Image 1: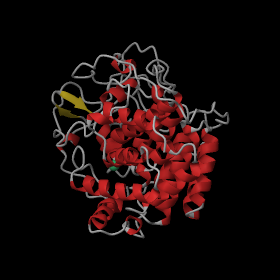
Image 2: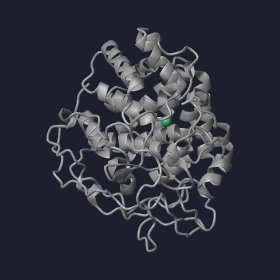
Image 3: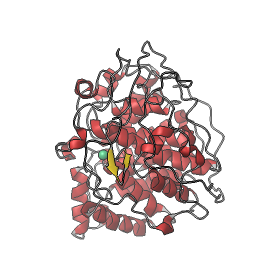
Image 4: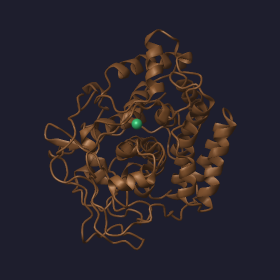
Length: 467
Ligand SMILES: [Mg+2]
């Protein structure tokens, strides 16, 4: 969300001290993958997929996983750069800082469990979290060992779960850096590599987890509301009620909500119609961060995804750049979920943005050109360092283009930005998660994410619905 929207980020004791062990030598934070020329269309995913029964597996042990630490004899990804130092990605041992979440661990009733689901994640999530997935941004080879195909997930369900969990992982990774306005500030707090994994944990009932922020809180609300939705106005009214409920009692407590989101919710609470509740000049990233569910649910109809995402922005953000960013995000995710290449999807995103705000479209087009021309992130991402919607969406497609085949590298570059880190990483996670599916997400990050099970179940349930 926009910096101008945000209250000062302070006072959370969970942020005390660096949470990562810096490697002995600096990594190149911003070395690009070589997959910007991703021009091959994926095999189209079936949009209409019959529900499948989820595997029944034992619940995971509690506490869930050991800390994410790159093993000394890693057999999987290797740093392609000059650095080979051991890297730790988060605080070790029991949680020692940070308040326990004040909200319930799960805010979903049992009835939300998809038919046939055991209510737990597929078996891969019970595998040891030994993959060296957080060994530094950008210069890591593609993950080959931690990401195994999920069993019994349809392509559609995998795309949904990949987007939802991928977005939430990005959000949680970027949680500690969203208020840091420069690379220097990030390195000062987290070491020369910046954030290389979850750097913030909380604990509840003996289980520690990496908490996400308002981005995921609101996206979850949107996705849940869209399941089975057929009427635009009725759905927007439902969203309005849920947004007000979120403002007053967010799941997990308040997580740095943007001022525009809060102001929009307050207007809704006063009875202002949903289509005019958002401020006309609200152009922060508070609506685009929750727009990707429209692309998932309406993947069969990108035009509908665009329309609904734009209309939903009006609840809190009515500035053209916010509408444009929402349109782009929904259209991009829709095309990706349909099997389009990232190149095609990003082109469609620029076109969608242009229908609402030429400046946003131009900013996105420039970012794409720079990614394909290997323009350094220190140039592009410094320019996009603000917290406005057009900057976040442009930064996201720049990073996703540079790291199109490597989700960990993409997410880490996103969170080590001077801009709206958690939201940029959320957008990147949704785009690449939809593209590569749930199995491409690093297992340790999936396991340690807050409420992974609830988000996974919601994603699968949404994939089985028809809207
Ligand atoms: Mg946030």
